[in-house]
Image (cartoon, rainbow, N blue to C red; front, side):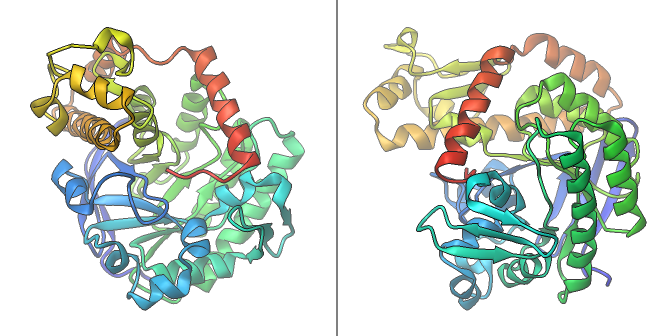
Length: 394
């Protein structure tokens, strides 16, 4: 089934690629970063503010919207665009990652997944066909196939079985489609096993989808492993189709991902850490709640043109966080999403100017990432807390 209004045009293609992703609601310049709005909202911001920041593609989540407010409610508005007042492009995740992260609360078979709601404990069932049915009600421009996403520490046998099931489910999702105005992307799985990644990618390529996602990364492995598996996978994927690296949003990881040939990224990281006072700068994150910013009359970042930096002092934003004022979370989110948008603009221009290697080298030499051992410890604790309560949201 052909997809109306969807195409991908590469302006320049080397190791790093610049292109345009055309969807029914917007043309999106790539490489791009998608802010996450799991529940039909990017937390603290309005759709107009996202547009003003330069975003015209965001992400929502099938699992969360299915549970609350429900497919019937969203459908009664004519779809998620009208429900949330967003006229740009939109991608919905299938909800597979959220379902599989609820390991104590779900049962899986080749037919699909039975799981209990993290909201009220009620029992539900997702099959590939139902995942497509619900996403068709929501009406996103890009929809995702249901996949099995095993934990990174799972055995090879478990990951190999997930590859086979993900392949079968992707084909069932493709057969279940009824709308021609949505583009379906399958998800390459395989854990940290390059041969399983190749098997997964080759099987999905044979089925000829309009784009391909890489899933099951950035969930506890090292950054070097993420980069290595990403590069090994993009080498297999078609040159003329968009490549989407799911759940990756650290600036340094995006720069490495683009170098490996990735076109699309999403992550709740920039908005989530913003609400904890962690703000991006060209040289790494700062903690605005730290006592060193008390009384600081300069902006958060002298090099930043965001609303927060142009209108308020670092000392004022520090005060807002210490006082737990709601404006703190809005200003921090505006700042981090401005940073991400500017980063993607700079990345794209450097590719078009054929100087991306120099850009990446300079950026990575200046940017100080979060300490790896601390990052992995925090990530594992976050996953543990998330798995014991509610699935990943923005």
